[in-house]
Length: 556
Image (cartoon, rainbow, N blue to C red; front, side):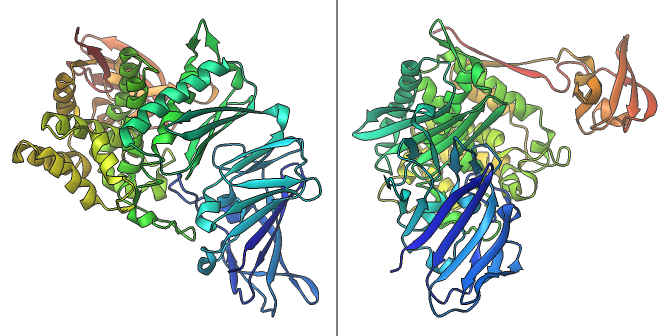
């Protein structure tokens, strides 16, 4: 079986020249449309230009037969293609090149053919000098004449294995071991925190996750960090690694042994991404087995892939002692605020919202149209976790560990997921299974309000949950505002059928003033930021809209 070969050369700031060699008889080459971990179109063909193929007469331009596909010229020998790629995005899912950093996410930029995904692959980085370090989960070697060579068992492994290369002084490396497996931490960017404490936090949550799942699906694991000087917040899971970007780096600090808010968030993301090693990389929605990079791959199980992972990622930090109960409650309050303040959760189910991430899952989108799979999925995961425990069926992580076990099928279906939860919930009787089916009907397939169920579930966990009225009266009336262009006060969310909605306010309108008069609120505003309007709104009794959830653990 022929080894597929790619050569990636830096040819200027933000510029790569990529040369790929395939077996004879290739009829087309394809650039991926999307990347794992981001369930929307990436359309990476937009960064490609000058696609040519070596023929008897020289380099011949290739004709596109699709937005991301080129027809090859028939030849008797191997097919060699070359093109230029713009590498100018520095986030956790992109590709970047300059004179001191080469960061490549192969699924952005490497061509493939559907019939050759099982062929071994070799990638050459010809201009990486010996004094540079490289961070990747892929096996690699280097020499002074030819640069660095990376090897992958096939296209699926290659596309899910990013790398960073930089001068040794720019790429810090730390390491720890859990359960006989090495875990590597690679950091590019300024480090203003305590290295030992940073590594220790990773080791603690890794030990907690390894104890829960009982095994690691890969021989070793790599955390690849990019800490730029500009604002960034992003994490992406991969088969045996993760890439996490967070900036500006000067906000990642320790003060008297306490992590800054930014550094806390980095650790939160890292725990989330490691959970993905079992949930998404080992156990994966059947629609993604294997990954089909040629077009959208929607799945109704995004709430499992991302929601369950979000919930467990924070829970492992608590169990590992990385954060205290107060820290977990603060994180869960923040998540519940995002949940309760999104009217889309009452319009489109989390299962349907999962499918629709390919439409608008990562954009602001149409107001109140859909839920957020990370947030709504995590809330559903919490409710299922408590239901399982109440029924004597263990915890949600036990069900996930069962499904993600080394002897279990990797492809997951919704029916298999819920059948596992129902079986475990029926340990003490069918009442538990009935409750689990109701959770699925109401909060997975349906759009019922979760708050009453959340209050009950948190009470079972020794947590008191209350709703605190929003300090802004206009928010209580249904119009949540924020800072807009030129410092104006803009409506960000208007709750359907609220007093503000009935008065005609919508997202993007500009609020000039509000005045409380008895039990009413007089609002002066500009419709569509232009047309002057005035309305008197009745102020709702009680918490009203956009109430803030407040959580407190009962003593003991």
